[in-house]
Image 1 (cartoon, rainbow, N blue to C red):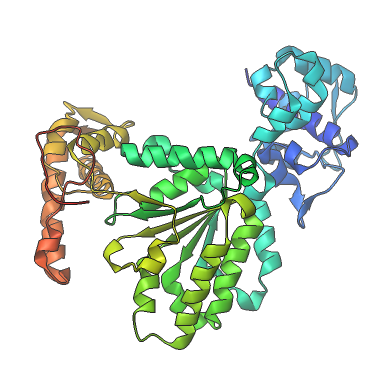
Image 2: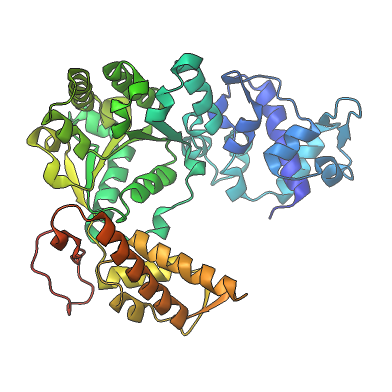
Length: 444
């Protein structure tokens, strides 16, 4: 059960306990409270429980209105401070109304109420609470500390996202069995890092995602960060050559330093084929030095020692050399989706849409060679076309028309942008076959 008054009382109770118990730290505050009180790189005591901090932390627009009818609350009209006149009465009122599940999301309250509940364990609750390093406010304060104003161009090379800023979840993605197996292995490795270190197994936690554009490589990496509640550090390798980045090798070092300081985190490097291309070309010596620094940094970083999960991604595995391949302990294939996967993707993406006579299998038949990204674009076009006719309910015919329109546009684009062998545009059907009517004899 939740209500505005319960939300505000929980906030005041948490702030009051945290302020007086000096043995609690930031890991004991729920993230939604932490971000309100975070200032200059820390949470300072006493926590200021004003109408504005209460509103920001709870989402209750008028927090005083929510609790003004309770016998144990008061507000200072001048400062806007909210407080208890009788904390014991507040605790008693709160305990009668709160569920144990809710207490499991608040380590500070689990700390004081642990003995009153058989199935409430403070250490477990604290362990499951998202670490401070995953909060946007903490990430921003670290980046400010690490980079001076004249080094802001460094942030062109690195994009850091907090887990709550990633909208895509693994449940919204359709994965192959191989992809699911690899993700499960990674999750287990992260859970049991101490054990792996103990037995000396350190060569783990460096993945290479391989597959055509639009097959979900970046989406899976981001969704993994969301699920594991880790910051997502994305490096744009092509930016290494940017004239604005000055000393490129130094910037590569700084990128890995960012990841280590933000750990546990995911370090994602897209366009990994850029590394091999650069090594094999007549690029400037400074760029080659930067790429060698990059490979050395990859060798030295570790999930077990540094709490950094490294994921590389490439659309062009044929351009990688042996030096690049051997840096990764697992290769994860991202094929174009087969019939069954296309049907599943269409089901997932349309979950919140109203579609008359929806038949995803029929649409899957017509979309061979399209990626998950292409299918999302098809659905976007169908929705926008329906809106031009003032409709929010779609029909199967809308979707079929959108597929035809997409293929026409795709053909025009390919005529204009073909580079090399036109046969390369003929899409293979690369996933694990859900229907065995589509047989393909080329390698993935």
